Structure formats: C-alpha cells, structure tokens
Length: 203
Image 1 (cartoon, rainbow, N blue to C red):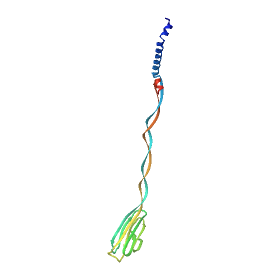
Image 2 (cartoon, rainbow, N blue to C red):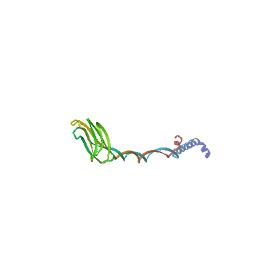
Image 3 (cartoon, rainbow, N blue to C red):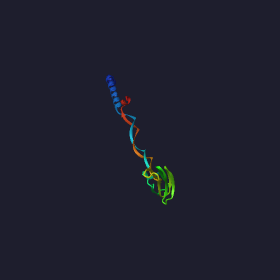
C-alpha cells in the first residue's frame, strides 16, 4: 500500500483531529493576555491652599472733644436773713460762665461782685435767672431784700466751663490673614491593562 493510499484511508480521522488542534490552538492564543487596553478615570484628591480671609476688628483711636463741666455752689431753699443769701467761689477756668436763678416772696437785689467788692452785675426783682461770663478770679453772688426776713427763698448758683478732653472712639478696620483650607480637585489618570482577545471582543 502506497503512502497516498494510507493518507486517503485515514483521511476521515486526520482532518477532524487537525481541525480540533487548530481550534484548541486558537482558543489558547485568544485566551492569552496579548491585548493592551488603555482607559482613563477621574480621581478626586485634596490639596491644602492658603487663602486670604478678612477679619474685622474694632480699632481704638483717640480724639479731642469739647465737653461742658459744671460745679454747683448753692442750690436749694434758704431762710432769708438781713445780710441776704450769698455764696463765694473761685474761677480758675477759661471761658467760665456763672448761671444764677432765684425766687423770693418779696422783691430784692441780686448781684455779682468781685473780691474787691466791685459789682459787675446787678438785677432787681423777686425772681429771675441770668448767666454771666467771668474771668479768672474770686466772686460772690448775693441776693438781699428787706421785707421778708425769716421766710424761705430759693437760689441756685452754678459755674460752667468748656473743657477739651481726649476720648476713645472705635472704628472698624478690616485686615487679612492667611488660613489653610482644603480644596477638592480632580485629575484624569490613564491606566492600561492586559486582556485576552476574548475579553477584547466581548468587552
């Protein structure tokens, strides 16, 4: 029997075996991770950054302001006596002014005189009020009448003067300072992985 006769005789066996071997080989090759797949993902991460944050504070500062000061030397009801109702005081402030008010059951004389007994102001009547600027020095204010001795009368003597003082005021001031903050960010990351041809076809 020739070789050709032998091949033809076993043809029915060899062809299926060969096809099977080919199929198995293809399956094995297609199962190997021969294909490289590249893909991207978005990842979230955090970074610490410095930011300028405003801070509002009340800042004190000094200003000069003119205020009115006063001192009361006489205030209230008094029993009228022959020499009258009076009070003496010293003026040692600039731009001082005396304020006088009085009320009596009988008319009288109210006057202001200096330490030398020089009358610098005088007014008649049972009641009244007045103000008078005074220079530095010693003064007396007196009310006197001759008809109602032993009776009550009201009298008030007050000295007022301006005074410059320093007071504290506040203003809002905005300052900035750096503070660390966590900032969320995203980035694109490329990946690659091996896969078989089966996975590639059916992905």
